[in-house]
Length: 95
Image (cartoon, rainbow, N blue to C red; front, side, top):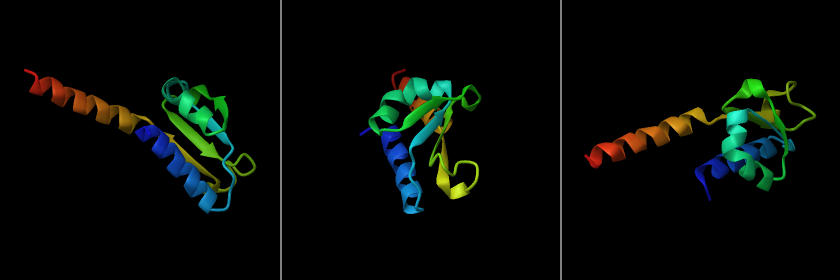
């Protein structure tokens, strides 16, 4: 299982533990480019929101914007930065 899929499943589990039903994913275009298949595999309704860019919001559509516990925001930027960091280290090793 990919690191991203684990992250998505953890966010869904947290929302469910708070008593909500996460059914939608509002995702930025960059997030969709990287994680569309993972989101589809989770059975979420997916909506592309240009302003979110590398982020996604998973949540219960009945309560998004009304209750903080009904949704989670996930950003890909830390994962992308970490990958780039390890790539740089690998390049340095190969010198």
